[in-house]
Image 1 (cartoon, rainbow, N blue to C red):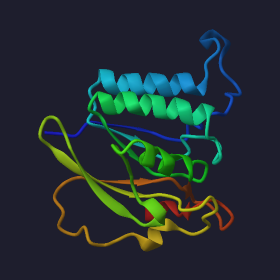
Image 2: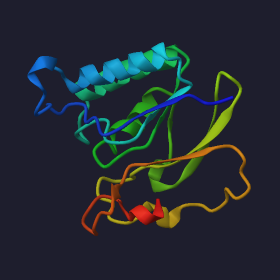
Image 3: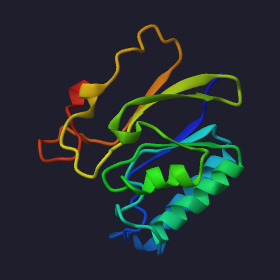
Image 4: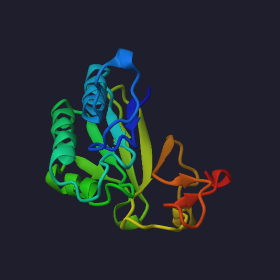
Length: 180
C-alpha cells in the first residue's frame, strides 16, 4: 500500500520561458502547470506538493495567481489533496491560495515546521514535514529549527523544503547538502 504524490516546484508562473527548442513550438509556463495538473488527475495521485516558487513574483495577484488557483480548484474537485510550501518568490501567493481554497494545506506556515498526514487511496499513509518562508528574505538554514520528535515513526516521512543547497550567507535559506 502506497501513497501516490506528484511534486512540482520552481515553475515560476508569470515568468517567460527563455530558451525552448524550436520543435516544441511556443510553450508557456502556465501550459506546463496545466499539463502537470492534468497528469495528476489522469494518474489519480493522492496528493500534489507545490514545493515553492510556483509563482514568480511575490506581488503577483492576477495572471500567474489566476492560473495557479484555477488548476488547484480542478485538483481539489478531483479529490486530490494539495500541499504547499512557500518559497521566497511566492511568500504571499501560496498563503493567500491556502486562505482562498481551504482544501490547500500550507506546510510550515510562518517559518515553523509542521507535519501533515496524507492517506492514499490504496490504504497506505505518509507524513509530510514542511517549512515555508515567512518573509521573502530568509538568510538562515531552516534545518536549524527542525523538530526531532519523529523518532520511532514507522510511516514514511517526506521533507518538503524550498532552499538553496550549499548556498552562502546571502542566498535564500542556505542548507548544506550534508544536512539534507
